[in-house]
Amino acid sequence: MIKIKNQINFLIILLFLVLTNFLTSCGGGSKTVLPDAPPPYPDSPFVKEVQPGSFNQSTFSNTTGRDYYDRNRNVASSGWNRSDTGGNINDKYTSKNSYTIQAKGTVWVLIQDKLGNELEWLSLEKGQSAPITHSGPLTITCSSGESLNIISPDGKPFQPAGMTKGISIIRIPK
Image 1: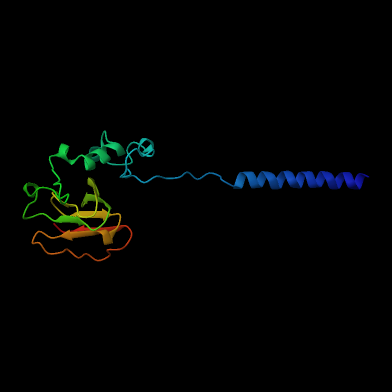
Image 2: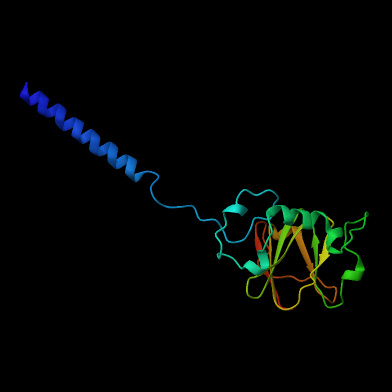
């Protein structure tokens, strides 16, 4: 009888230790880290959770994912006008010294300066184009490298290495 009671106590203690170990080891500790850049889509629930100081305040002050959406969808407010026939931006905003981005499919484009500061988000659909109006060396990150053409200031296609089906990073030596 005492032997059975000792075995039951041993099993209870063993079960308690195993259960405690299981509960403390699963799902413990590490936090999910969000990227510093705001997502390029409207109504993102993550924009409000960005830690102050984890990004450059001067390039992101008082903006939300909705602002990016509105800026890219309502280009008339930024001074650009898209024509009804091709969705291209008027020639008065293009320059002989600027590169042009042409979309071969739906693509998100992030333009950054040489220090990695965010300059502009663009959302382009097939057939649309936009001039790159920023000066200096630039980094272009796009959601699909094969959905984007970059035209150099002299009108020739700019063929960087690494244009892939997925996310592509292109450096422009402007």
